[in-house]
Image (cartoon, rainbow, N blue to C red; front, side):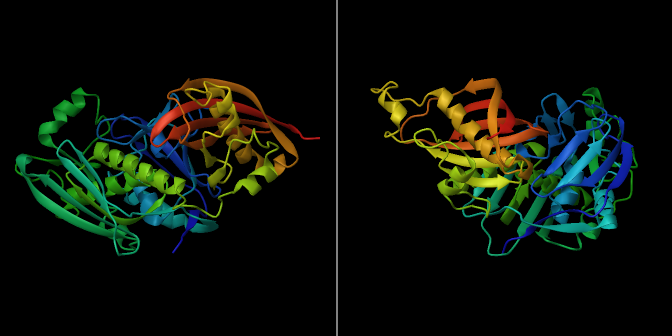
Length: 434
């Protein structure tokens, strides 16, 4: 059963201090169009690009989830994303005037309350859903994460927390999404730290905004300075972190996820492995949305024809933001006859051309570009990372990062299996076709 995408009916805002940076920030959460995803906009950096809440924007940070696009970053997004994941909110603009999402009371409940105070809107566009068909396992730093197929609908999760060596007895919690009770049973669970870790965290420049109002401090005997909201509050908070990190997959999951002693690094690795699974299923035609386009639909948009039409199928279109397509590379390609015929390699410029054609397909879907032609204006940051040979299948991915008037900037990547073959940043101008 498919589900639709959702956004908010109205904006809401919250203010507070970042738990790690200690920097105050005001966050305004605004509705956004279908297929645009969740994007963080740094209002204190007016010339910066939006930062997408997407696995491709993941950056390495200790004890939190950080997103980065270019030089722009946003820290500690997991509690807000957990609220979006649990409530089924998919498209938002999150305006923030600082580097870190505020800690508030250390839980996700203020974000749940904000979402439910303004309500949600069904956007009548299908949400991508991924049904697990085989196990996916991550083992990292003593943590284990496993995602399994499940006979149940929706997403089932369990989390086992074990800090016996620090005086905290093992805790086990379970959650089934969708769950209307999550706002009472999991959302209020606050972040925690052990007293023995505080000095090291401060020395690493973390926890500058932590205080007893937003952080539970556990001592070596398993007790705490503040009264717990639940006997197993630490495990419930870890479940929220897991939910927030799974939002970065960009799809609803149908299956079961079992987590043991996992943190953000392990969660991010699971997301990357699940993304690889989705890409494989998409390429094989197992996960195809209604927005897929066959060769006839592609030629109705693009002026290219054989032998210079280099996109065989569009697997997925996410509004005007992102497109995924494929190019099947066979020995019968005309360019192989004269390009290293004894050791055929697809010319890198033709890989870039295939990406440009898919980008053109994405741009031409906008009504205001009807009757226009996308002209490639500039190519920057080109990297050709591996050879493409007969028998390969190129997975083409393009994402529009900025569209203004008749100009569009598109990030492009071509892959063979999980290996990147080429990437580039392309700028197009739209001109009249007549």
